[in-house]
Image (tube, rainbow, N blue to C red; front, side, top):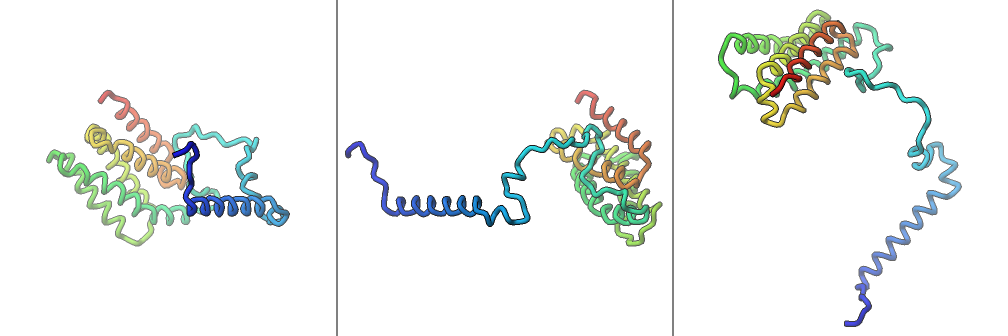
Length: 199
């Protein structure tokens, strides 16, 4: 029980092997062969660039593909395909409120709207007016969820998810010109006024 710490032999062997592998990796990375490759080494990728970055102050800034290369027909076709995904998100959020929904005229109207949206999503014919109506309907469902059930989403700790899904839909509709920018701005302002009120 002296002052020196004994390292088991199997551990010493593992440490030596790890050091050998690490030095081999470093040698390969620093070799001339690495520099002759077409891809820059990882250290090049991590360097800061002084190129100006585009402003991201716009609320509806997205990471979707740029639509300047797409025709209106192509954008509507993509919007029709994405409509199923957006409908899936809004249906999960809408069904989350099924236990707390009060039976009244507004809830009955939302149920009818939801049934119509489902018919639009299942219909494979791509029609510009149908796609726009589908996105308008989904935005109406989100406005309903914010206006009537936002407090419930906060209590369930789902308000962030609700906002994320809503913003994705708004950003996609703006990016692909599915809906008029003025109409989207009105919906955005209305929801921000709803969320801005005290809970």
